[in-house]
Structures are given as C-alpha cells and as structure tokens.
Length: 124
Image (cartoon, rainbow, N blue to C red; front, side):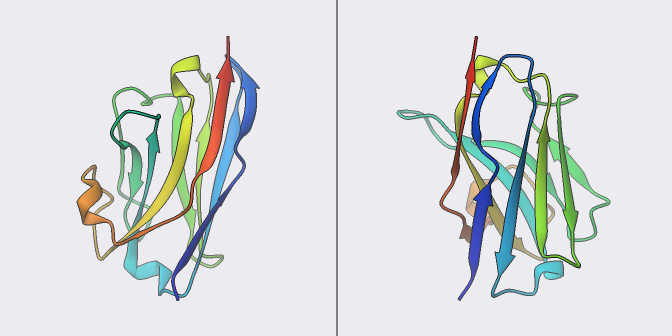
C-alpha cells in the first residue's frame, strides 16, 4: 500500500533551519505531484509548498516564500522541505501529501495520500 513517511522535525530556535524529508513507497512516485502542508491544533490544515512531478514547477504560500525550498529526488522516491529563517509561527505538524498527475497546488482536496506528520517547534 501507499506510504508517506515524514522525518526531520524537531525543536529549533527562531532563525534556525530544519530539513524535512518524506519517503514515499507503494506508488509510482514520478506520476505524483507532492505537497507539504502544516497544521496547528484548532486550525485548518495549511498549504506550505508544492512541486510537480518533474520538479520544475514549484509553488509556495506567501508566509514561507523566500525562506522554504521544496525539492524532490524521483530516483529515491523522496521529497524535501528545506526550512530556513524559522519563526515561532512556523510551529506546526508538517505533512507531506501526494497528488496523482497533479501540479502541486494548494488545494488539500487534490491530494490522495497523506503521511502521519512530523512536529516542528520553533522557540523564540
């Protein structure tokens, strides 16, 4: 079955960096756009970044543009989120998601598969 497993979360001070990874299995990875979303308790899941199947098309939310970079390695079935200049408001559970023949857009309903999430906590 399809599995998406996130890793790389943790506790970091404001201004620091983290790199999240998502390992995909059970799917033809290169047929899927991938996205990163985040969620804080009591709030809706929020789009962070998306990437199309080839890695040439990328999109970001305004809140992370210029600080976060999404990338993928189709040979390894991996997608990454490099997070720099972290702020306390970036604290959330981060999820990766897969969208079959999608574009990596912001609509969570477009994504068929989701990981379990990894916690990112940024202290001030």
